[in-house]
Length: 85
Image 1 (cartoon, helix red, strand yellow):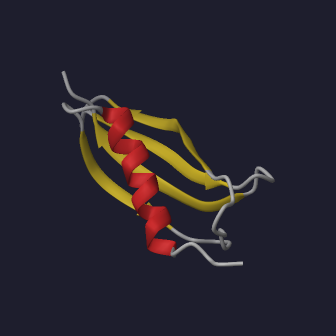
Image 2 (cartoon, rainbow, N blue to C red):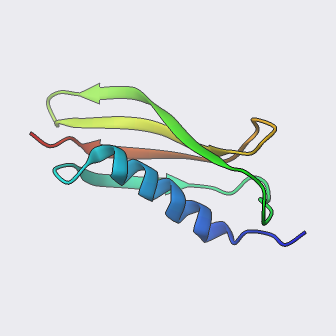
């Protein structure tokens, strides 16, 4: 099958984070890696969870991912965000 471009998966992850943040939030750090191929027509799901809250810095650290239809993480990542008021 046709492989989905790896950087496109990173774009999807960052878009998922910024949509969750809303207009008042700020994406401070973002990293991800492509561990497996994704194929055109395959259903993918982005998600994540809060793993750390730094009240002093006002930031939240997220473990983020893209999973395929087998529920396998194909692109794990990490984001640090600052929530809006």
